[in-house]
Image: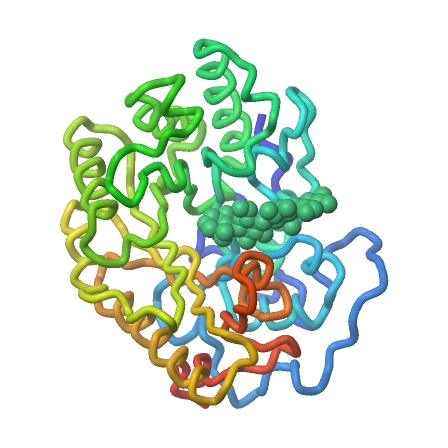
Length: 362
Ligand code: G3I
């Protein structure tokens, strides 16, 4: 059953924007959550958005989003403030993943996921759901299931999660990172036990649970023509021909200035759009070796500008989302030794040169 909905349910993005402008939402400085909260960081003077600055979300008709750290969302007022003022879409960085929502079979924890959706509804943001099926961050109990049990568990998972937020999630990453770099199917538990048809089934089950949600396949290192992006292109083409409800392709776009910017990025987005689906930048960030130098930050600005401009130039590119907006909470330093500073805002939530490059009002 869908959870009890707030007044925004089913209004969609336009309704949310109209409601926000009519004053139905908390102002950006007000706490976003109604329940008692732990002590919060103060909003520092430098972090408060400049009134003269046009926020990113007002620069484009596209959704402008950020991955959200659920703990920071609950505990840091300055984090919420910039998120609210600059963006109009949120993606739960971890809170909707299977291992988080159902760590033990049949035992659900919706606290983080609900907090992200509730925040979005109170502040006029749409939500990108991330992610239904991924070989990582899956619960351990899956691994001991037989093929038929796994198929039931996958169907139950998709149906339960998508139905819970029916009408409240603009787009779902239904499957994430299902190909290897050579273009073959990743040898995941889903592929091994369920066979090639599992991806089409996942999209059909998600569509049954929420016919209004846009359903995406999402992956990294797909911003240029290569074996993996070709494989996704072939799969999407085949799924569309067979009437499988797939509506979009997500390009994570985790980049590093140590590698050149993906050649043909815009035309690559366009060739997917030409299949009749939307495309979205779903997890953009641009990492560098620390400590960040002015020169590195300038290169980073070039990369972000190119990502932004490519999405603007492709009419079916509907979303520019970054994987976290502040270096304070980026996943990068935990994964790449000595690397970081990958986001548009620094630790203190000050806009970096990359932000200033995208935003002509600065
Ligand atoms: O929540 C547990 C906590 O209970 C435990 O004590 C702690 C100990 O390490 O781990 C915590 O979980 C961590 C989780 O983030 C939440 O902070 C995991 O160890 C850590 O592996 C996990 O990392 C996430 C990563 O996906 C997992 O592969 C990152 O935050 C998240 O940014 C990252 O996001 C992915 C996208 O979903 C898909 N595309 C790539 C992207 C970057 O890797």
